[in-house]
Length: 417
Image (cartoon, rainbow, N blue to C red; front, side):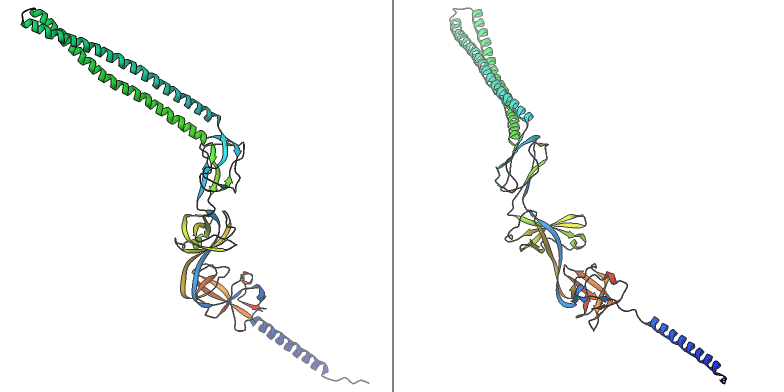
């Protein structure tokens, strides 16, 4: 028969209690230890990020902007008068000379005004000829009257001389002599007045002819103006170059001032760049620049800076030097780089994807094992197109990640795989 063992159950309970207590202690220690561990660093593929090394030396500071080539000489041809487009004689892209007719317009009202002005000119010229004949006739009549008075005066003077001789001889009375003297004096006065009238008449003739001549000149000017307006309906290129664009179609009615065409000289081009306003503050006239036409690079200098800001950019014109690459033409898209200054001896690194000049940004710096990167605060100074000046936070030879790491903003340490 089985004999029961005393105390076995109690020992089993004690041993179980000890096991449970030890297990609880171990679990608490493990939990406490895990809470003190740092979270595992996330993994970043090394091939997906760009890593650069901090360098020291001269740094070329530049700004970059997109733009296009534009002609230095552009002629916008506008309509001088109202008209309807009858013909387009030249197509865009064609070489033109100053007298090349590119458009023909018509204006019936202007044609009628030219006809009326021409008729007025002919009428004014006929009136001048008529007035000239009339005044010449009057002049001859007046001269004939003066000659008649002069003849009568000479006869009276001769009679007076004879009467004076006879009076001295006592052959005629004193009364007869007095009559001869009075008649001679009257004719002398009439002759003087006739001669004065002739002088005044000449001035009157000159004034009347001058007035009519002024009318002829006025009508001539009006006729020339109307004829010139009519001639301008045959629109000419105006300069040596290429017809760049026609703004009107056949049959279209144009008003004065409307742009009809654009002519430019394709051999003289300049680059018109749009520089971000945050970078344009350091751009100055005369600075060197390089223009990439995708088919070659040509150098130039900054020739004009627009004082206004448009859509967050400033327009900068670069005058090109040297021969243009093949394929360079107006409106060609280009990429321009302007040299601002050369910093002599600074720490610098490739430009990060974000950050502004004179600011502090966070960059991941590679650790000694080159497998982990730790976020550090880096103070940057002046910025260029490809480089940025380093003022504090990293040292010469350090390697930093320049790619966008915003996906890991919650972590201060990453692992590069």
